[in-house]
Image (tube, rainbow over all chains, first blue to last red):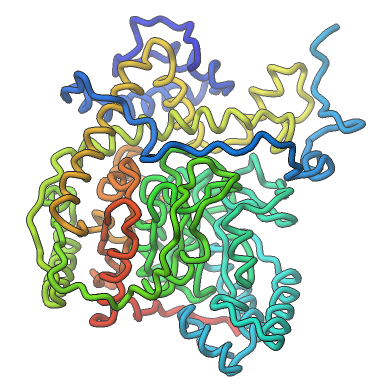
Length: 108
Length: 488
């Protein structure tokens, strides 16, 4: 679960503010251009309005359905296997050096 | 040149009788892709050298006595399946240059069965869409009318099969992504029971609903291919450890007295009246075949869209968090720091619909909204699944329309985001409940195909396949083909 830091009073409202949408975007590591924020907020609210129908449903005592699997999921032996080798994994790296993924410096 | 609109079953006979070789079939299919794809945009990439090499090997294997039923038959994979050594883009800028280092289990199994991969078919970006218009590589066109959408997300697969580019294509279905494009393009598409086919190597959208299946001209072809695709996989713990029936051996089992439930909610105001008339005529055909039609009710049908569009984006926001510009996928130019790398790689790499769903998913999973939205949707999902189970304890199969309309125009600006989501209103239930469902051609309205949906009990693919097959023995809708101008 993502831990929220935006105003909980606004959550659940179908009139979500642009500031809230920006906060959610930050949580999702997405940026929204100033020129797009009104459109994105409008579409966000349209989608939330679609969810209003669920508030009328009595779900007291209903066990949430996480997935449709009816049987317990099997476990397999914890054994080291090589499904994809290092070269295969590294071939798509945007930047790498000596078999490590390169990212911008995080510690000065 | 062989006919472009043959079935897997007929090609199997021709190959077995040496009437045609795999090399000939593959060469013809590649030529037709080259010819028609500029107009249809159904195929993102083709692998001519690999395909011809595999076809040569298939012909050699046949000469050595290999009589595998799918040996040497060409096909396309939706570009959501990882294919070792070939691009796997998921129709996204994010993965535009991604070459998978391994095969999806579905790909491996069909390769092992001797099928020839021609290339990868177009789709909505990360399977998010019902029109194939969200593809980074441009919209795919419906061969029945190229000013219209083929449906989505498996629009490229549906368009390709309908246009005779391949007799078979794989698809995936999270909320209707096999059935709706199959309906709009006039082909047969099967979404198996959740857990029937391995999801390993199938790029994840909403993991509790994603399921792979065949898209072909007939139910018989779907049966033949599902036999090769299905079955337990140690690499996917949600893939059921249940034996795989020989579906093609049950196609002629009697359907006399089979109870077919017709939910009144599937014939609501959401359904186009001409489409409704076509479906009613097809239901009468089922009755004429010996099935017994039973009025049933699925009162929560309209809640399915709301439920799905909470759960699917929530799961997508979690699944797509892996695209961070570090290990694979798109990376922005000159990031100033790690946060900048994450933010710009994701914002530049994902298209609008994907970002829209990630935002909604991040919101409904946030601490302040979790109970109100995500938990609530999971509870309603349980109620919807129970409704289906209750109805399917009274009937063998549920039948109705696959989609509320025929194919709509490309770039239809009158359609809002939520209008587009309503395209899935009749298909979503089977995904929420994890049930097998298929779409079969059931008529034309204004020259455009209509699909009838058949939904079965969990792991009840035999029931829907035999009903579909016998319907196709009495009707000719599945034999209709669009008129396309070949360039040469």
